[in-house]
Image 1 (cartoon, rainbow, N blue to C red):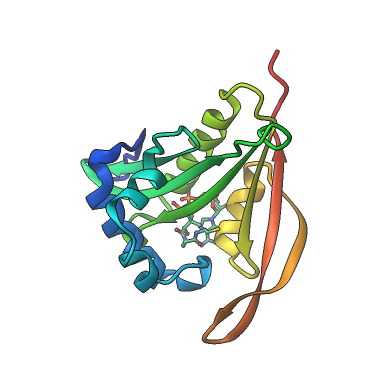
Image 2 (image 1 turned 180 degrees about the vertical axis):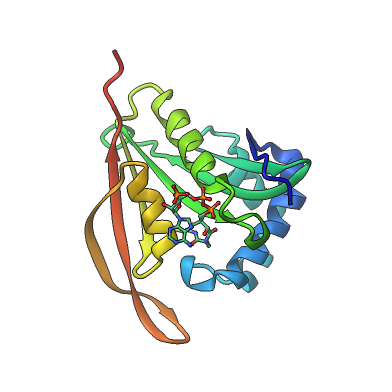
Length: 175
Ligand SMILES: CC(C)(COP(=O)(O)OP(=O)(O)OC[C@H]1O[C@@H](n2cnc3c(N)ncnc32)[C@H](O)[C@@H]1OP(=O)(O)O)[C@@H](O)C(=O)NCCC(=O)NCCS
């Protein structure tokens, strides 16, 4: 695996490889996500297109590439309602096991934050992370996210219920 990682926005043409990566993610990092591979495998093409390049402009995905290979991703969601559209929400963060520790996660997160900050009126970015997911929590804290609470018993896992830590970051005011 090359150590050069490039981050770019995904488009509808990337649905097949994004879908393959995320169906792997829902199985390989099952406790990190609230969806199962079976639920997602049943989603139509239109669901995947909305996830990575929403025709209404309310979400898009970034991809991390090692050479031409899609090795990681994160999706940025925006709120449509006037009272909450200052908030963006990150979901679906995953880096393939073979590409971890090379900076892909940090590059994706920094690019997602830059994209959120460049959207007019967006001031806050939120996310949730499963309690005990040390690599992800370290990454988020390193980029400025702070926990503001934990939802108890948020997801059922084979090892019992686990909580979801809610994190937020206030973007710097535009100058
Ligand atoms: C969390 C995840 C995205 C990190 O991706 P990555 O490409 O390996 O991360 P990076 O190489 O960019 O590392 C960035 C930072 O993350 C943290 N980090 C990454 N791996 C870590 C580990 N094993 N233990 C502790 N901290 C870790 C560190 O703060 C690191 O900064 P440093 O390199 O200065 O120490 C990856 O482990 C992953 O996909 N995990 C499974 C899915 C998941 O948990 N997604 C999050 C859902 S909320």
